Image (cartoon, rainbow, N blue to C red; front, side, top):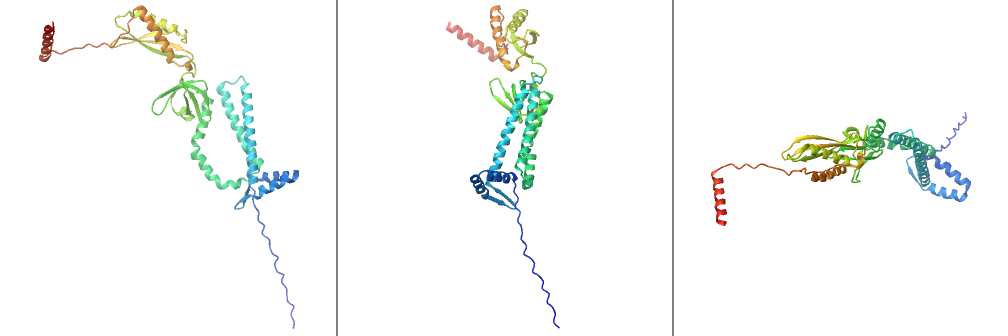
Length: 341
């Protein structure tokens, strides 16, 4: 008995489709736009697109890199232009003081740059999953390498918010060795404060240092600063007349304020002189204080000379103890003087 053979059809060959991820989706759209407008331009773009590097399932071509550079340049230029225009607009607002204006500029600039970065990523159509490999390393870099940078940024914003330190203030701050630096604040930046001294040296002090260290602000609530000028006169001088001359010298100084008026205090009885301190006030400490002391002392020098007030030299009393050797020395000196005569 014959049986019918059953024919089983062979399975159709399957085609494996390889999907290549494009990390920069905007490059494809721009390439198609260029090819539709110009054939020559399309050929150039295709040539650049063929020069590519394959990393796993991700393909990056020279055309992709070129598009990324163009978009980054456009984003940076746009953010810079918007930040500059915002500074000009804030400069016209008279209701804001210098610290508020600077704080508003920093916050607006920070917001503009964040928005610009997000717009750039959206325009490029970058697949952020392609950067997932680097996210861990980037997070560690921010956590360790940029920790001080973000700390200084927040410290600068806090300084501007509480207005404890602002551009134009005259401050004195001590470094790690204990040496004090005196100068005027020119600018509060993202990372550091620019402090300019009287000899035009510019110090960049991290914002965090101004938060944790003791700062002497000479113009925090008022720009009036009192200066002390020490003076010593002889014990044989007329003390009352000396005080009058000291006040006259202080009042004659160009930068010394008449209100509050200068005063003179007797400080102590020294080894060689009666010590006084002239107290006088100025309202422009950014112009320095040493030149005011110099002007007062030079004027006082001539006033003392004209009125017979003596500025004494150091004086010491010498006591010689009596002894046989001392008597022998005196006798020998007497004999020598007699022999010479």
